[in-house]
Image 1 (tube, one colour):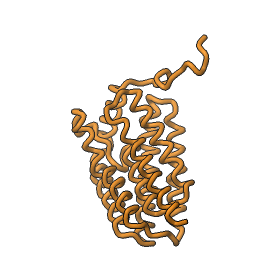
Image 2 (cartoon, rainbow, N blue to C red):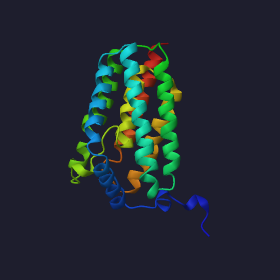
Image 3 (cartoon, rainbow, N blue to C red):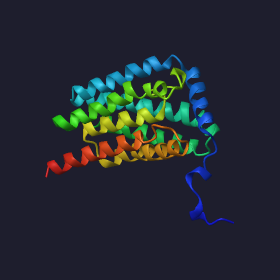
Length: 218
């Protein structure tokens, strides 16, 4: 019997790249035209980051909370769990993040992001909402495999990192989005997906920008 340290992530994956993207295609087909509503919600988040304030901050966080709740239920629990036994646990984590974002939205105070930090936050959220769906075309898979903010977990997590950066959120609110970027990034790498490096890169960029801001305050 092999020792536990000889195992790699590929030993635990129960699905292939083909199965993974077939799941996404069937999911997109089932929930269409919710993508249009999700795109509108993503644009609202971007607009709120562009015009920071207590009111817009609350709107962005509530939109993100709904997105995390929906993805946790509709994607992880109802579909991803069919090919990954960790799906229900991912659904739980997304539900927890949804509640945390709601709690954060109810807090009346919030700092206004500095110029550079705001630009990074806008860049992350903009790429998540507008750029991420284009990865399906760039990889030759077509629109039916597109991963859309508020529908799929990866762009939802990246957009959330942008909003958390803009809100100068406490590190506690970052834990689940960062953990998902690590888990999903590692999964995509094992599936040999060409853009698997994007999620970890976005996460590192968001953390670096947040740390630089904190240092500049002292």
